[in-house]
Every structure is written in C-alpha cells, then in structure tokens.
Length: 510
Ligand SMILES: Nc1ncnc2c1ncn2[C@@H]1O[C@H](COP(=O)(O)OP(=O)(O)O)[C@@H](O)[C@H]1O
Ligand SMILES: [Mg+2]
Image (spheres, protein in one colour):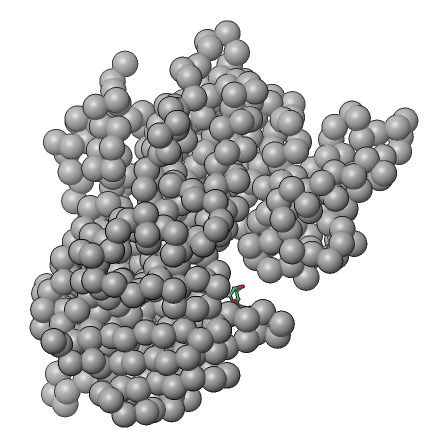
C-alpha cells in the first residue's frame, strides 16, 4: 500500500454559530488521486483551508508523514510540501501573469533556475498553456484557473489539492487536467480533487471521501463505491438532484417542447454590445418563445453577462434591435451586488422586483401587506435561513441570498425569465428545487433563457441550445448536442486552437 502522507482526524471548525467542520477525517496517500465529494456547504473548502494553513482548526489533529504538525500559515503548509489551488482566485489582477507566478515563487526555486525557465518548462510538461505577458485582469477565468494550477505546481508540491477546478474549464480542458493529475500522482504525489460532481471525481480518483455537514460520511476505493451509495452519502435524506450531481437529466427529464412560433416573446436582431474593451456581443440574433427553455452554454467571460443583461432590459445594445416583453424576471449571477440590497430587509428586497406588478399597487401606493405575504412565502418555500422577513439582505449567507432572489424572480410570474448560473453556490436540494421550478414555469408558458457555465445543467433543462464564445452566439445542432460537441463550440473564441472539424459538426447553418 502507498504510504500515507496526510492524515486529518476529528477536524472541527466553526464560523460564529455556523459549524463548518464537525469531526472531519481524511487520509491522503502518495501515488493516489483522491476525490473529495460533498454538496455545497459540506465543509470541503474549509477542510482544505485548514490543511493549507489558512484557517486554524478548533479541534482535531493534522499529521504529515506520520507526525503531528501545526500549520499556522500557508508558509508552514508549503514547508511540508502542501500546495493548494483555491476555489477562489488569488491572483493579483493588475500584475502580469509572469509577475503573479514569480510572486508565488518567492525563494522557492532551486538556485540558478530562473522563473522564466521554470515556467516555460512547466507549461511544456503540463500542457497548461497560458500567455505570460498580459495582465491577469485581461484574461478569462479559464486562463486564470490554469495560472493558479501552474502557480501551485511551480513549487513542486508533494501534496497537491485542487478545490473545484473544473467549473470554469471546457470538457476538453477538464480531460487534459485529469490526465495531468494522474501523471502527477504517478510520480508519487498525493493529489486531491475536490468537487461537487460525482462523475468528475469518479473519472479520475483512485479513492473517494464524501463530506456531509462537516463530517466524513464515507471513504472508499472509487471502483468499489456504488454510485447511488455515493449520492446518498452526499445528500443524506435530502432531495437527489441528478443535474447538480453531474448525473445528467432525471428519467422524466424530457426537455420542454419546441417553441410555438406564434408566441415569440423575445426577438434580438443583429445585436452588438461594444464597450471600451471592444466587442462584448457581436451580431446576436435570438428568438425565444413562451414555454421553451433556451440554454446558452459558454465559458465565463464570453459575453453571457452582457447577453443576460440585454435580455433583462438592463443593458442597452450598441446596435441592432431588441424586442422584450414587459415583465421580465432576472436571476443575476452576482447576487450580492446585483440582486439584493444589503441594507433592505427581505420584504423590501422582494418589493424591488414585485413593485412592477399591478396587483401590488393600490392607486399610487405599494401594497406592502401583499409584498410581506410573498416574502413570507418565499422564506418558507425556499427554506431561507433567516429568523424573519425583517432580516436584512446583508445578514444572510450567500446561499440564502440566492434562495431569496431565485424565489423572488420565480414568484414574479414574468413572461420571460433570464437565469444566469441560477444554481451556482446552492446545495443539492436547493438546486433541485430551482431546476423543478424552471421546468414548471416553462410548462406554464414562461419563456426561459438559461445561461450557464454548467454544461450538464444546460443539457438537462434546455430545449434549444446555443453556445456563446467571444460574444458570438451559435446554435448547437442536434448532432452536436453532447458535452464534446458543445465544448468544441465554446472554445471557438478562445485564444487557444479552435477545433475546426468539431465546429463544423456543431453548427447548423440555416
Ligand atoms: N469565512 C466564513 N465565514 C462564515 N461562514 C463560513 C466561512 N467559510 C465557510 N463558511 C460556512 O461553512 C460551511 C462550509 O463551507 P465550505 O467549506 O465553503 O463548503 P464547501 O466547500 O463544501 O461548499 C458553509 O455553511 C459556509 O457558509
Ligand atoms: Mg468549496
């Protein structure tokens, strides 16, 4: 058996009244890829922030090479060969890529080896291709993720942890990353992949550990772990959402029917959005009918933010024509800055959307009794963890803020709902709820545009699917309606090589 490099026992950590870890256990062995699974909020990032020296545990022990250690800073963790690729980016946006890489390396290189050379060698060896000259702020999230991984690898860690690295990569890039992880494990390192999607983990891991509510509930060789057992370990008695777990659509998950041409509610023609940085959207044509879910897949930063805002009536097109219905619901991705007002209570936050609806007016006055009723209903139906509807938006955790916004926009009964990564950051049961609600709204005749970086979500929920790359929207043909086909279309705008044959397969011209 491979030697154990890391052993975590009974790790506990609280944030105020929130118990993030309540006795988590983990063993990482040399030569293995270890998958760590758990729904959002299970405590995965907290556990690895403890191992990375960023958070002090309230209880439990950490052993490296069989000896107890105390890790009080990332420097301590590095001294033991522990390298952590964070879920949230840690790069300095205004510095160039090389400057960021050099920063991460301070004093860690073998004498005589220049940063430039080390970086070039590493890029060649790993195939993690990134440009070195631009400032990080000029790059998309895919590049940023690759830089974070390079930064960790440059210090040659014995123990490498990647916290949810796949969210911003295309399927093709994910596959290449997994090959690299296997290779790194083959060199005798302990490699850990943290994810909330089963098939990502099962594709690469030798062993898996499942965390739930801060506890380790299962550890098994991935060959021996039964998929349904893993699902149950992840969600407990909660709702199983096959989409959020990366298991594809549920058996009953036939996509909503084809559009009725007489019920177009959205019509975009030749829409450009241009800003000082250049094109954000270019010649976008899009029709959406009532009752259909139109999916837009893309790697973040390719124009979907702008498209979502044009559709929500919040951003004006530079050119082209935009026809939208009167009542539009919008679930923005950045819920804390665009969705909720921190100083408003839940009733006021709900009113922000509902004030546009006639039934909430009585003459010139807003009907606060009605708003309060809706707010209370949202709080209970969407299981918002808030003591009352008088709780301020800013006092809620991120996940609960999302529940309020999703609930509010779903309650709008708009003609069009624009949803931008609507389940990001939600736990599995909340995500299942949102997915069900989107289906229900579509079946009631609402037009839905789902913009998501989660291909499984797009595939499972959408009727027609488009890929967006570098501001250009392309329809995905039925032949290309799978991860590989859509992935190829998503790549087109990237600086990387375009997969042209796959592109031709993927585009319906006319
Ligand atoms: N810095 C923090 N302050 C307050 N609560 C936190 C903080 N970090 C994490 N939490 C809470 O701890 C729990 C576990 O979070 P996390 O470790 O990020 O889970 P995961 O990575 O599995 O999604 C969640 O309830 C989360 O809201
Ligand atoms: Mg996390």
